[in-house]
Amino acid sequence: MIRGAGCVLGIDTSNYTTSVALAGTGGQVLADVRRLLAVKAGERGLRQSEAFFQHVECLPSLLGGIMDKHRADICAVAASDRPRSAKGSYMPAFNAGARFAQTLAQALGKPLFLFSHQDGHIRAGMHGSALSGQGGFLAWHLSGGTSELLLIGRHGDGAEGAAGAMAAAGAATGAVADEAGAVAGAEAKARARTGATAGARATVAAEAATGAEGAAGAFYDIRIIGGSLDISFGQLLDRLGVRLGYSFPAGRALDGAALAAEAGGGRSEPCGDAAEAKAGKGRGKALLARIPLKGFYCNLSGIETQSARLAGHCDSAALISEVFSQATAAIGTITEKAAAEHGIGEILFTGGVAASAYLRKNLVLNGAKAVFGDPKLSSDNAVGIALLGADRLSRSGPGPR
Image 1 (cartoon, one colour):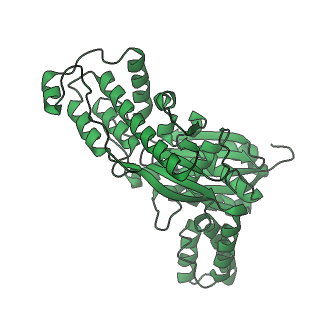
Image 2: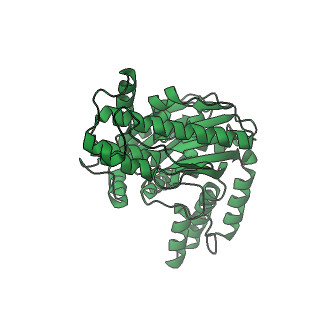
């Protein structure tokens, strides 16, 4: 039990990780438990239905220990219910965590806060980092399914979120605003159609207000200004890794291989003549063409095709190292251009790919500062969601004012 302080329970159910965390109202991380979802050997991901089922199976055991120890201290519940804070953003896997969170909040009689998965990544990346966040900042969200360069501000003291919540609460007795789009809103519509009692409608109205604050009143004001126009950096690495015999997700294993190859001086074996001729390369030259850039955006399908063609025909470590080198160079060039154009000197890196030791070691920016948080909080987690819940309670979370 936490003496003299409350805490917020956070839940995140992304496509590959079930996560539960506990954050104190003072911003301290009290618990962080996760379980990676099982992906069959040779597969490159999970169907949404499979991810949802595994989340439902994992959540009771992950929540059990935390609830046993901290039930009396929990003053709010927070969850991710969508990938991004944008109208129409939806992924079924997040419903598993949002439904559990809603049920727990109702059972405990505590408020429920809903945020986007991306907001959680940003908040987790900021925790304990050197980011000042004064006047806004840039952030790369680099993960298995996302490669976006974001321009970030923060809604002042939650005023917009509070206004949205009040508007939704006023309309909830008739119909929940479509903008809310949260789990609680869906429940309100369902109960209205089935003729719920007046008492039930009052409960739904309160839930709808909470849901509206999570959806319409996102904690951060986010604008996408760059990134990949096709596949993500995480998909590039995972697809290459599976082709080379690594288990999915393969990013961490490939990161270690890239560092080892760099320490060893590059290629230990030359590529096969047939493979290099096919790729238009000669011995001793770069294996892959540079990643094409257009403004603050890039295309990764080309390098994915090239690496797929070379996989199995040349030294794997050399190929992995070059993919990481090309990716780091592309990210660096885009970041420098964006920082210069927007006059922003700090760039936060978050998401699973941002945990890469190779990227952290080799990314060098001119005229800008790369800010990396704790590698453990770069990959999918519920810590950011729990911290956002604590911030919402206090209305004074970190970030630009």
